[in-house]
Image 1 (cartoon, rainbow, N blue to C red):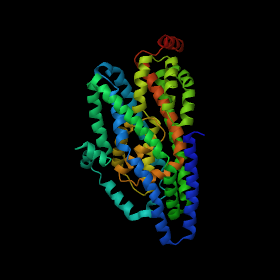
Image 2: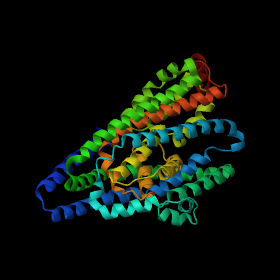
Image 3: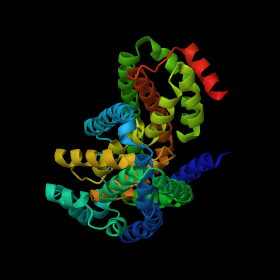
Image 4: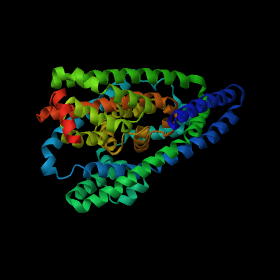
Length: 424
């Protein structure tokens, strides 16, 4: 069994044993013991969350700078890059808005009511969320010190600095490539650390589940059922929108594209890693008829800037967690959260569970208890399968659409010939 599969099994085992331990305490212990048990067992969750939080700043900085710097000379690639970014931004906003609309419509977290676990704390957090003003937003956006921003995990400030740093690095040309190569290596080191940190996830899940069931009973499983069902509805709607727009632009070529990317979609679905299918997806898009230079430029950008399934999940998960803790986020705050996710999602690569890092950072920024992220971990693997496949679909469509807009989309036969020439 692969390590990702073992981790999922361990998380499910942790969920079950945590539920059993919590339910025993819930049905047989005194209120004083229950409160003490809940507080102490959550230390496992606290350790896990702090391990995740320690890698947020370097992960966002390194991946975002590399993604921007690889744009290269904006004057040279501005036309293709502009068209690609038009698709990326439009698809991102659509995905984020869809997630926000669905989570407000279905309210998957509303029935759980975790606020009773720490009513005073949640009341205080809710109050802070309501006072999130334009002035506070500007203070969160503009950094006065990169070190201070990283120390406090001010994610938007890190994003702003990374954008300036990435553009400046790209402007240096050959000299900047040294920095890009170094930060690319750093980003891979941090992503490896993510895998190490996730090995502690079962302990975090055990602590979170045991604590919440000890206080609230088995209501958490109703939340899981609603959460996953409504998320699948959202993914189905997102696929419908993406394929419809793809058909409008690609017309009769769309069925051929979908046939070419079936295998990458299956691999992405089963491995929960869009990076795992990058070489195969590149080959299939060139066979489909996309010009190799367009594929080489747009597809890597898509892996940093166009994660449609992940972005829909981020708004869905963040607001659902707030609902579970009884925190009422007004429309203005939710739209601000959408903007934050629009920016921060651009610094995350398509690797398993990277979305949780962004959700955790967003919850921290908007004063939503981060323990909620641990609560959704038991079913996150199954959500990740669907959102990763959606990411691959979105990037395949983006590359094909930009090729069509550039007049560089050959038919399948010509695409095969060009691929053969390129490889010779």
